[in-house]
Length: 416
Image (cartoon, rainbow, N blue to C red; front, side):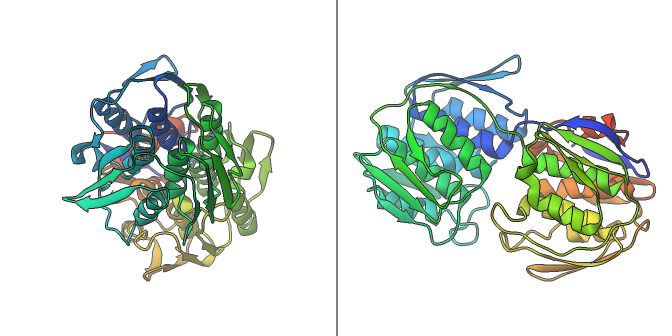
């Protein structure tokens, strides 16, 4: 099993490009199920989650292939409408095939996503939305079994913001009869990217990026071409990598407004940040202040940057309070940061970080999830000695060649 070995103490300097967004690519790739023919995508990141998505699309009768930098999906009539557990367990986003299959074929059998218990990281909002569109749904033997002769538009009010639920219902409503209105919809940029592609296919969607999205159902969609948006989480991670090492790093191919909540907090902590239309640069700084954050849906501070920001605060001057409101079990990286010498006191939803510059020490650590793995690599960049991060298959789910990008900036990092 691969490990990442990081030797700390190198200031990062230079320019690095942001890749395509995993969280935009996944729903867009599943949306291809709505229209037979060849779909063509640019800027698709080469990640484990893309491989899992490709595997599931193939099981549903599609042909997928890389053509240089292009990713092509040839959609054919599905020989089976079942998304099997063996594939779905690898990636929670697999539930996003439910809406397209149900609205296109009138039925779908989709395994419950890996690690999902209805309620904790619920898909119940997805299912209630499908029912509101007229679907009959049964949960049986670990599978969601959905049936509908024809989905019909309706007004759906989400009890809480749900990114996946908003995406699934947008896709389902695209071929439904009548008009669907999603209220309290998630506003994430990745949802806007999905809506843009659906509209290229012939859908009629307005309001994406606001709390009210309107979908006027159409009879048929057709394949199109699309460039996946930049990965704002990767961009934020790379910006923090430059900041935490005291270096000067420019992150290109990213719209600054996509990571404005991070930029604002970094400025508050004492970093000088320069922005242009499609780049963000952090200036060298060797002493910064501990600043509190609270994670929340876009446009507020993203939960997917919480762990990386915690690593930055671990070597700040002073204390910070990090409050996690999106997921209740997203402090698993804390104990690993403590192994490196960080002074952090975690509670259920709150962690107090007492910053101290220059006192992290390299040690063997274990990644517990995707963003936790990134935080450990960042901490390793400034820890004395060598940090070995194991279980980096988590990292490969969401970061394309992270070690190569960090190495290009001067990091001493290698995959073993």
